[in-house]
Length: 268
Length: 70
Image 1 (cartoon, helix red, strand yellow):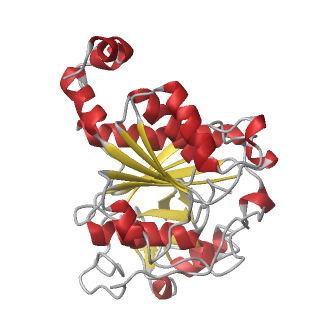
Image 2: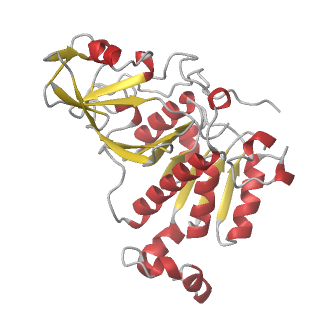
Image 3: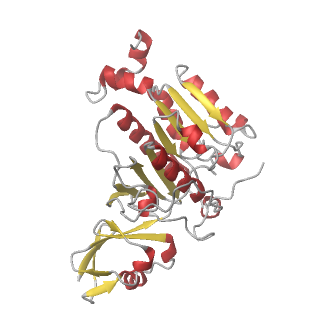
């Protein structure tokens, strides 16, 4: 049951017919894992904390760098040099002390991901590299965990939601990681900071829709936008029967650590 | 023929085109960076040369996008 303070804090949610007290209670009971406390994870974490998600897991092995602050709005100038998970946890607790923040100062890899995601209802992919993106997809498909994919570059963003076994997964669309160095990195190509906020909040919205159970998720379609034209588009597709992980004859039956970073990780 | 590419109707003199030819026509210079779907079905990468698009087809070029954490 929500207490009086919670009813006041979440009153604008409770007023929504699609959420109400029962929906807010689902949010309070939910456990969401955010992989990457960066451009996408930062806004997503703030909005999910504000929304009252009961348990927020945050995994990131990086420390805050000055060049992160242009878009990673959960980290502030005095945080430069501190572990991102610590900085994020502090802001979340200030924003909403009700949120139980579980931090993992680590990166996901084939050896740890299944053990980490098993405790969560929904996974948000806020990573920057295709090795992690394929790993997260495959692990979520294998473990039956719904998740949100997000990607940004320059002025563009894309997002899709995957309900394993029911809807198309990332590998249905992108069969395998792109050739090394084929995709320009964020640090090479740049990214408009506000784009990260646009996409991260779209992902947070998908999380809340899934938890509460309203609306139509971004399933079997990719939301694609370009900020220069402010054109938003849905590319629709079907599950791919030849998909390597969720198709009829899967070839990916164990998790793979690809060695293909998109954005060169800064070593501190 | 008229086909819809990434939400826009585009006209071509040819009556049919392979996906490979379409990628060239659309100046996609790095086809390894793009995933192609025709009428909702995602194509195998090695089928670009043999898959033919025709009048009224809907084609999507989906690009790899990383971003986020670095």
